[in-house]
Length: 570
Image 1 (cartoon, helix red, strand yellow):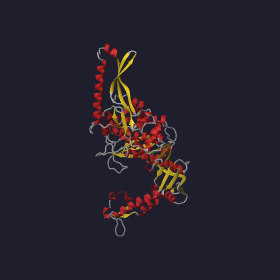
Image 2 (cartoon, helix red, strand yellow):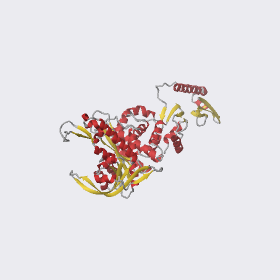
Image 3 (tube, one colour):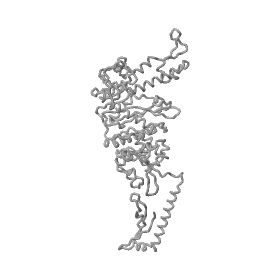
Image 4 (tube, helix red, strand yellow):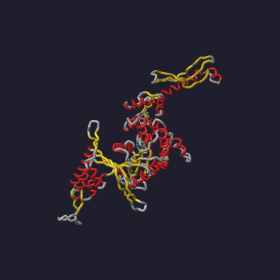
């Protein structure tokens, strides 16, 4: 299409305008619009333009030449030029993020500083980029942010400054987001789920923050640990970052204390965690603070009398699925159980707490555990006595005995021999498939307790999404506050994804499907008034388009439609 000089005759004379003709894909035909009004012919002559028709016709010719040059440039664009593609899939995260009303509080928080950037803009764009294409901050700035549909207005150095700042204030920022959640998606903290993980760093030696410790991924590199807290709806409401060599057991107490103080929570909270956080101090802390708990417990660590009760076949109730297949067996008891609580003096005092204990036996889990045990036993058998070093045996060490004996069986200080620990193997095979849950909630029935505890898998899934889809590790930033800022970006990414999954999509769509949509909903610019949708059709996109009323399945799109998508409020 082209520009042309339009002459309109009315009572005042001939009015000149430059008009633009173009094809409108929504209407299916060519349309015209005013590009620039010029004025009345007589007025132009009085202003000194002797021949307005010729003068402005030449301008029209020049505009058409420029348009032709631009069209030819687009047609002949080299492969090394900037891609016309843009990612639009992050718009649901943008919608939720802006609906929480956190920008005004972050603006106030940064007001004492003379930043040349907006903290909310940097924080938000890094969250969107982390979900769209997780990579280093350097690559994010130069390769990912330019592919987002919107432009962002900060430099690379400002990005790093902002990352360090939000890391130094991460607890306040989480508090601000939690405040925003209360207005749209009120949290339910009657039950909270807590777990910890750690992230490794590819550095040569540890420092004060990145320390050597027990890695969840068996990495030898220094690690940083994270504690994550979810509410009853499995929405993240708290995060704690701490050095990798510190025990995770006290973290649940610190996070919950801080949560209650920051949000003036006076009600009772039921704390749910796995056996790694089940210790006397955490149980006593819950009781002292008027809270409850549902923790799993290692059956191996139980006294022999309790193990005997677990293995006794009577009192178990069988639970079947709809096809009549056995899912699991369960039984429970309520009794007073002893706990040794450490005092400030270093001594311990014994207290007795009334608890309910629920034991389950899962035949599928039992089969899996027995296979793993026998596999380790076979490995121990294959190692010869000359390799009698614990580090040669790894995990199967618990199934072998290291001794030096003479022909009479007496221990000596001579060559060490290795033999299978038949008793340890037998005990583990007997306990395979059993699990125990201890709780202060005596009024809940066994099925309710099991159901509440099983929701703990949502934290494990959040960690999995962080480590796989969001590539939270290894982290490449170096400063402590920047490292924490990096994990805050990951935390807020999970928060917005969970809000979309649970509150908007009603938990009917998997995390993988949502992330796939966000990463693959792309549009390409083919002219100044036309974009095309490059996204492959799917059941999710059709359903989401119907739910939102947005043109997510349309092939041709115009800027006004793209603006509508970005400004949509879920």
